[in-house]
Image (cartoon, rainbow, N blue to C red; front, side, top):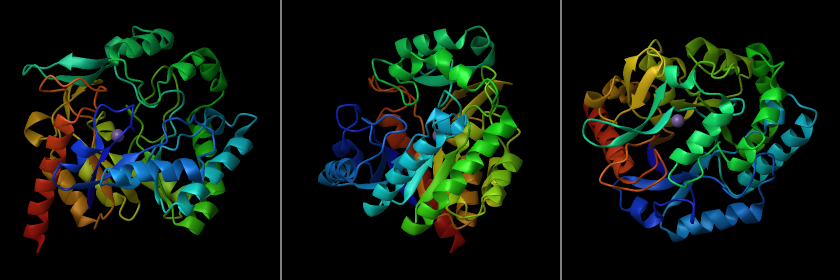
Length: 355
Ligand SMILES: [Mn+2]
């Protein structure tokens, strides 16, 4: 297992490569070409420049999060094949640069949804939180605005202002897309890119939907064990795999995460591991990574990864904002560093016990 941290690139991220390098056990980052827009071809030069920056910082790029999928691919719009062609070209260029892990999601319009990016907890830390009752009160237009106001001046992934400016058109694009259609569009996309993934040995890792239910009437398909397995069977190539995000899966407490991990042996290429605290149905917040702080058994989760022989990349996911740090919500240094080392500690214990 390789522990990593997500890094948003120079000039975007308040956390530096030097800081990440000083977290024990972290030798690589997950990053992206943040100056590209979904649908644009990633160039070899762009990828190489990003690799050089990270290598100069003493770290390695373990994978990409994300190469975003254009909404016309998700909605089967008229330019779908053109955008798939561009996506394939980006994958080829990544392959040529020796990058073999690509995280993506197939959620319409929004990458993820929260109702509060800085909910204060009893200890004075702040966390990302979701409350369905709050979400029900706002229309998506205002949500984009309120998220923008809450983001401490950072641009949040999936919520770029230029996309949010076109939100009505985006919703229109999906008016005839239900869960079945969205699934067909995903399979169409995966079948088109698999030959390139075979050629360059690229693992595609779809992120769990977040939260795992329909928000604003938009379809959601990567939500629970059967739905994920259905996708694995529809495109049985092992390059069609999953980003197992425990936080996203845990938005529905009915998801038995260790059991889902065991059912996906050989198909989990990347993992986001974090804890959440469940208050009520549709109401949760992102706690510290430790089992004692949230509703998940992190030991059981790490043990399940160990049992299936997981040797991919893990990163702690969103952290709390602590110690007066000012950073992109969920992506400060301190709590993610604590999370990474907690997970590494669990892993060391599990590994030694297994021997
Ligand atoms: Mn995640």
